[in-house]
Length: 363
Image (cartoon, rainbow, N blue to C red; front, side, top):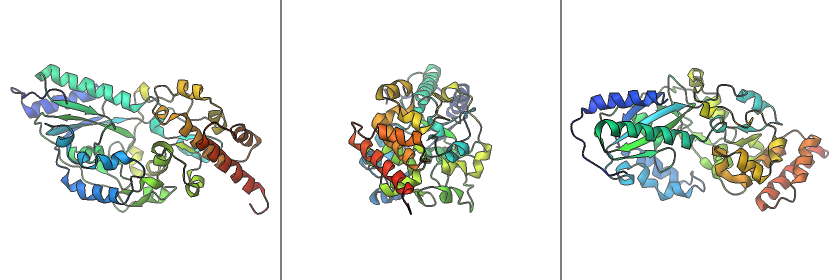
C-alpha cells in the first residue's frame, strides 16, 4: 500500500458519492464499497482447499488466510472500493455458433480482446489518482485478479450482485459478463448493503457444465473445470476429460451462456474488449499452424499470451482430436507429431489415436 496518511476534512458519505461518479466517468458500470469482514467465508474456503478443489493452483492454499483478511494482505485497509465493467464484445460471432462448429476454436468471451488485467488496472489507478487529487495522499492498493483477493465475496458485500450457483457474481441489471476490480484503502467510507440472491431453484448452470465441475450449488471443483484445465493447469489434461472439452481451447462460458440473468447483459462500449486477431471465428487448424513467434506477436496484449505457446498448442491439439476427421485436421496433427514439446507431442498422439479409433470398425 502507498504510505498511509490520516485524511481529515472530508465527509465520508460525500466522498463515496464522488468516487461512484468518478468511477462511472472512467467507464465502470458500477462502483460500490465493502467492509472487510469476510469471516463468514473462512470455513468454506478452508474446506474447499482441504478437499483439493483448487487443483495445482498452489498459490490458493499458500495465501488462503490472506484472502479472507484484507487488513493482513494490505495493512491499514478498512474498506474495499469494488468496481464492475462489462466485457462482452459487441460484434463477436455468437458463442453457440462457434461451439456447434467442431472445426472452429472457441475462446472464452473475456479473452477475445485486450488483456483485462491491463485495462482495469489502468482505470483503477486513475480512480485512485482522482481521489488523491481531491483529498490528498491516502493509503491504497489496486487489484485486478492479481493477488489473494476474494473479489466475488467483496463485490457481493458491497452490493454489486450476488454469488451465483456457478460461483460467479450475478447482477440483476447486467448478468455476469463483466470483470471485477478492487481498491483496498484506509479511507473510512460508508459501506454498501449486500445484495439479495436471485437464483431461486434454477440449476441451468450446473446442468450445462460439460465436465460436471459445478459439483454442488456454489461449489466448483477446479480440477474438472475447463477454464482451469485450459488456462491454469500446466501439465497434461486428464484423458477422460479431453473428449468433454470439445473445441474449447481457452476457457469455457457454458455456465454463463445458459444463465437466464444474462438476457440483461449488455455489450461492452470499450474498444479494448473488441475482438482481436479474428479469435471469435478462427479454425483450429489455422491456430495450430502458428509458430511460437506468431503466437507471441499476435497474442501480444492478450490474456491468452499468459499461458504460453506450449499450453496453447496443447489445448488446440485436444480440440483437433475432438474435431471432424477431415484431411485438413489430420494433416495439421501429423505436421506436429514430432513437436519439440513432450506435452504437445502427447496430446497430438492422443488426438491422432482418437481419430484412428473412430475410423476403425466399431470405433
